[in-house]
Image 1 (tube, rainbow, N blue to C red):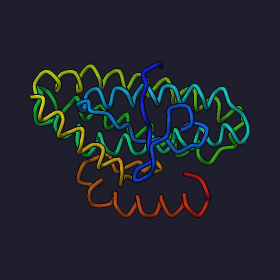
Image 2: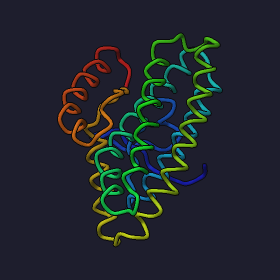
Image 3: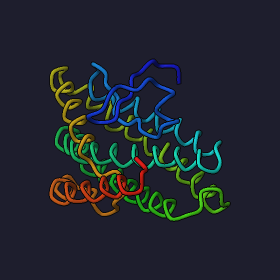
Length: 209
């Protein structure tokens, strides 16, 4: 993907694209775009990160996977807190659409957690990673078609801009590891802050971010 973006760790200095992957830190995308464009660009980043993890080995693969794991965790949390509730309220047949996406997200979190426990250069890791990549890409395409684009058509520009800001705030304080079972907005708001605190302490102690 050739789009010029600035990536930044929440609360930290800006990092030029390309540096973030090597450092394993890039998460938030700072743009002036609305929530639809913002999240679509994150989907592209996630796809790129899957490619990077698959192509690397050893410590480089571990760093790339850490970045992928964190980005998926914060991205899904923000969608569950901000975007899915809006889709459920605003879109015809929003409830079954969101329910299907939440089931997919729970499955992805479960597999992502399994990947965390595996040796990064093992065949099992590579096989599970490839399967997760396929599922995540299909999930992202469904979100974009059934939720993002339809919300973009139904909501005015100021509402979409406010949603982007809300997503950025949610990502800044979201858990950094997968937590299957926290797919609802209510669960994320109630349990999420504690999970985030534990995750970020765990990251700090391990030296991985």
